[in-house]
Length: 219
Ligand code: GRF
Image 1 (cartoon, rainbow, N blue to C red):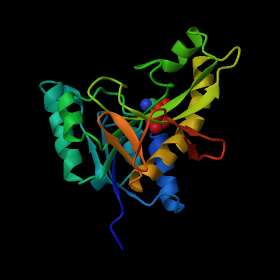
Image 2 (spheres, rainbow, N blue to C red; image 1 turned 90 degrees about the vertical axis):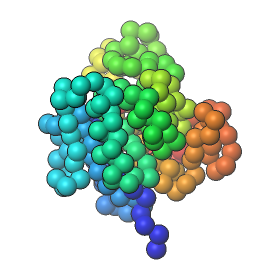
Image 3 (cartoon, rainbow, N blue to C red; image 1 turned 60 degrees about the vertical axis):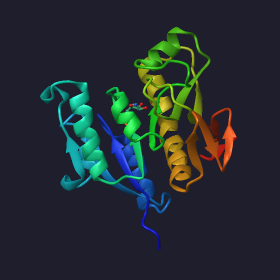
Image 4 (tube, protein in one colour; image 1 turned 120 degrees about the vertical axis):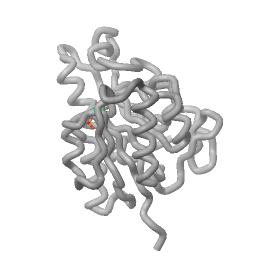
């Protein structure tokens, strides 16, 4: 029996995406183990979802600069010996040093249909832009913010009268199955990042996989 793939999760807030992965593991839908939760917010609720020995959280304010914080974070993540590092509601920009150290094994879920709306406040920006659709993207992380190869996306309609909060809830509801389906492929060894492209079952994919209504990713 080969050891279960090891997932390190970076989170800054409530950790609903982390919870979704944990629930899937418990239900036998994800053959992996969460080996640590790492945060830039010592009070993050996400940290409560694992045992104290699996938590690492420090405030960047306690470090001389971004590099020093990122280096301490990277050392803590590396010590958990992860196969994959999942940014799930992690709200701090990861410096190039961190990204390069885990290149190819580092993914993020972002609440927009990348390359649209990189960065923050994506739901309000989608409404302001008059987008008919919005959604979420799981992508490999590169030094440039939210610019890595997109693995998979889930789409939701933007409805008349939507507030950013209402739209955010609709997007979050598809983030969970999107992240789960993406991580299932990652831990099964079916996804890789090569030359800035997503490889799925050994073939380059030129557009993100799409989450269908049954929670399955399709080309
Ligand atoms: C989610 O919308 C995620 O896409 C974004 O942070 C939000 C909170 O995620 N990065 P979670 O509930 O903490 O997993």
